[in-house]
Image 1 (cartoon, rainbow, N blue to C red):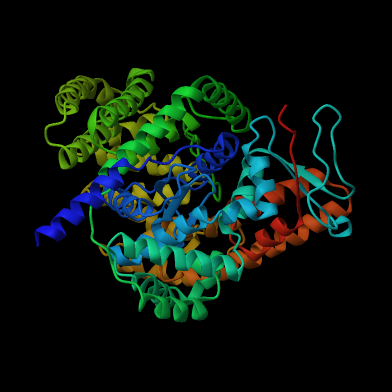
Image 2: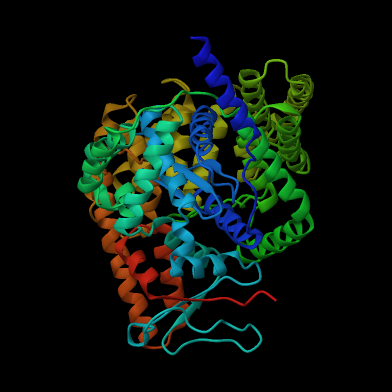
Length: 610
């Protein structure tokens, strides 16, 4: 027994003496980091602290078993409904919300994360020439240009000559796109294109080995495959199998390999994680001036591309429009990665304080009546709960408690003035939204919810209008606002076009008649809707909805129709209309066959770094 304990202690000591990941290729790491940051901007983060902590715990225990130290591994969650896990060559690993929704055990996740670590360790992304070219494009902060070639002028092989912004470049019959759409196309290529069978087999074997060495059941990988096989058969092209094919063969191979693998001893990877955090923060300090300059340029470009904001920084959303949040800059993304790598200690507390103070300063910079103290208080309390769970003795807790007390006092002082505005009947949409966030239990809340529903309805935002009408209808069966809201919903339901709005009405149980009308209407619209953004919004809001297969089928048809229009407009030389349709496909149907065909036709060109 003593010999065994000594051996475990010796292994732990030796592991602690191993260096954490370094950054062996700063240029490639910078490009991969940019791609990871764009992925977060494009898909959004999945805000689930418990699952995030779990993924990082498992991921680092698995990654520590490898001797690969060229890049620091980081693990994050992205808000994609499809079950998937992907990695970038710089060590950034992403797990989707859809994968976690399948209910995977730790052993299953260890196999999946080991597989992604295996792709990085075996440098599969680096050795694929097309992905290397894409990394060059997306990593270049001066230009991210994509040429979509026409059917008549498809490239024979490889990328075309680099685009020179001084003289311009456009191959005959092609259209050049930039910005969010270009990033979307490049990201979908990087994150959604499958590997060869040999690469997948090699990553499976390496992943199983690493997971077993970390003390997890090596059968977890096979179990995860079978779980995905059973839970997502209706939309296989939208999940893990799109990027990780050959399911039956891989299941058999994983089952055969696990027989000869014996799980090692489980032990925390705390020291490894802490050193990884130090590597990330060291890189940030060295590259800070460059990263800040790039972030400022990106913010300027985003403001130029996404005009028309309301004074409080939000957009009034119209039907089918995807609200693209302001992306985090690379500095913020790096700090978040460092916090995930090791969430305890002085560095973690400093990052957390910076994050919540950034929220505070942004909110306090708004006009008094537009300030959303409710959202700020919820963010602070969430941070408070997270820190208490991790470290009840953290020095950050007293600061958070004091500032929470101040926000609560400010909110109470604001209430009488906000009520005066409500009674006056003249207000902006942003004020109504802030009022409900600040004072959700106020007696004026049903009146405000009804007014906000009317405002969203006028803007054509049916989904948010229904949300507010439902809130107003819960005020009580005898309330005037509740009666008006119910009447409005009954009149609206038979004519609603937005799938997500209809699904909300179907899901409520307070009004059987409204539920029946909405269900009938949803059954009609789901197979015949004509706005690609409508289907995309439904999939984002209701990824497990009963109508998902029908929505996807119709979404693919609409994307195919838009693809045909792209070819048509390219053929007649109408580049603006072709680009508009390219943007719609890449934004609202990035996983569709039409988007895959666009990726196949993409000729990537970027200014060479000087």
